[in-house]
Length: 475
Ligand SMILES: [Zn+2]
Image (cartoon, rainbow, N blue to C red):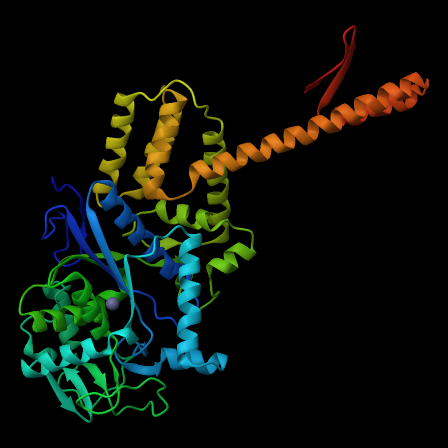
């Protein structure tokens, strides 16, 4: 098929046309959540945009296979293998076992995804399912001389690579090589500062809950190895698109490439898609700072989770997005207005095939142009204003919502049903009042009859006595 989908590839620093290894098929990987806490809406921004990417690729005709890991072991509080074990931290906090924590927060993550209309990837694999595969990969890396044992742990030897900082420009590489990250404690076992742990046996986590036998002793895997291994396990030796948040670029994705390509002996993944941060006015929102924003918190404040989805779609994935409740209020109004406009469309006029094709092309072009989701939304606003039949408009909105997943048609139907319920209720109330007024007049209680007329008028209903009886209208 013709390849025309383009997005910014972090690896080449260019907007590029995606050319998959196999014609018409896309092998896509997403770094999944570390299931030790609820997902922050900032993390969910990445999953929303990756969901749109997957659906847009399917929309233009690709057969997409998408894989996601669930990190339930090995992720320390610093991505560079230092600090506390995140899962253990969660278990201690809640007086539960690590596996209970993993199950609870995995379920919570997918429940959030469902509320945000994020499709579950075709394959979801918890890291603890793949320990034997991790061990095999580490064995191969040791055999090939890309890994070494020190102090009981197995490390990847970044010094063996000609180009470790694959995502960085020449200038950035120089800075990275001389600069020392001040947030990282020195691990004296490492030969090079960028070496990272593939397998922990001796560590400061004596009470590590999950441990497995390995050729190097009882221990557990490092974090980075799981994505390489799970990706190769389910997508084969060639991956087309790897996604994540920008904070995954270094060290996580850098390390994934280092170990995968050393293991495979060839290039692994051609296109890297990264979503930028959600910020608040104070800067980056993270789990350690400020309000812990979750989907449930937004719901408890009365927000429809799909309004947050719309908020993400209104902005480009490569721009930082600034969150505030005020913006979310505006977005709620925009969503309701859009739904109301769609609810007013009638199933009439037939579908105009030429107009349908024209707007569909505009929508596709927006998606293919570096996933310009806000431009794709603009196409909806444009077509609603256009001089085309209501039925064509409805058909287009329905078609586009396959990608946008804002439940536009469903919400419009609900609104229509609600308003017809309100109408029915109002009508029976009016008829009741008219009857009451007739009784009052019969009893010559004119004051009461007038009071009833005024009461209806206050509700926007005018009544008129005619020869054919009492008539009413909304004023
Ligand atoms: Zn990953």
